[in-house]
Image (cartoon, rainbow, N blue to C red; front, side):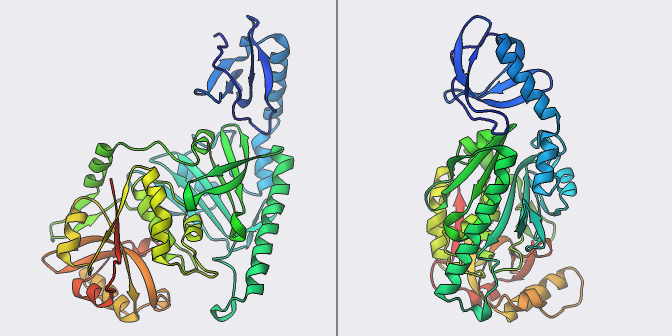
Length: 454
């Protein structure tokens, strides 16, 4: 295979080498960087113009072949094992994460399955600082997969949503101290990665209010990205190099295909229930992240990558949790538009007549309301009666949810006059039923419902 002139500078595998000039056996010279060196004696070089190209070592002159053989020997001496040791976690089982089954990767990282649908699955853990990664306390770990294989991995270190605060009161001095601790955490993670992966380069992810400045290392087709966004949180994400090159976006599903997928998610049951399935669960964890967690669920259902921590920042989530829905809406608009979707606001209370046409199309509805113990008890009792179980009192998680809350409306039943709600509190709360009149009681007078359309 000849080395063509389309091979120019590309993304570097930082653990291997900087850009260099390569010469093929025909005397052609080109500047390029290594993405991946494989045991079958091929090297992947990714140009800035055009797709990556994989060529055999023998494409090049003897000097370049020796260089590649040295890289291959270096990788065979335990590149991924060395990373696992440095991370303090069994992230890799070989030098390629993207061909691993998601569930198997989650098992070795000791993550609990959070959700599995026909199109994706995710696993999560909340160590809450009791486990260390790269020498720093990690608060949350999330593994995202497609239908079968791993697609990305996220580690959240210190972040303001998990920071303790007394009685909900946070002084300016407290805010400054939290920001300084988060910044120091990011610096420590950076310092731990440099000996493993070399010097990083600066890059960005996302758009608009959801754009992050990151330090980026590329290794064997993995982009490893460190963000310390505005002293709000320190996060490390791992995704395929080509996805990082697209600022984190994935290949977009065509509108017709998306409509068919959404329609296929609508389940019509013999008892009259019409319910949307395949909505991923995102457990907001022990903090007031119902708004960003719910938006992440909806965005990912619509095949738009999302991260509740970044959404929380864009939505101005306060220390300890609590997000303004209006700010979240404005922050999410550019992300939705960039992925070829539209955001629509619905006025009025969530009546059966209003929501049914959207549910029929496979479109959930984000609903903002004033959650009360009475409402939660009504939802628990109605759901229990449907299951032939005795009614019960609201548990602690439900009692403490009194106040502003956001969830998804995912179903309806015209015969019983009930609506299905789905909360970001874990799988047990993925589908609960409550009388439509109960929803009207706790709904505001404004525009408290939103849908994402194709």
